Image (cartoon, rainbow, N blue to C red; front, side, top):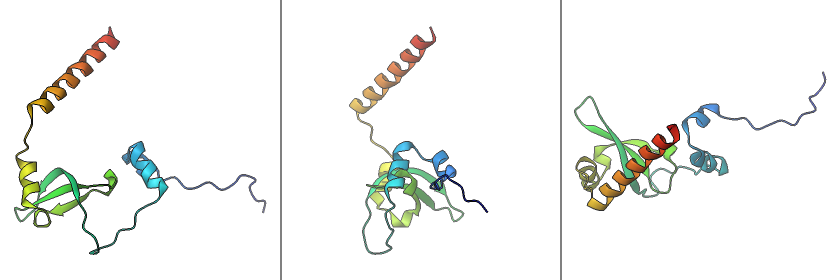
Length: 117
């Protein structure tokens, strides 16, 4: 049998390419962090979402600080600080943050309208 002249390429995980952003992909390709259970404390960057369990409790999708988005995990409410859960349930929005979001929204709409004209 004849061998191919072309060098063998690394396999591409197309499912990961579809799900991840380019920033997450670069972190993923540079090297994976090893997960160690029970040896470290991990800090929460933010709570992304919430879902109800069958026993009327909630699980929260946690974005971990200094970890890429694809490593976010669903954690039961018992594993989280009450302050985090309260901040997710009743967020405090400052006037400055609200104004900057409305200005960004208006600029986005105007730029789309200008490009369509």
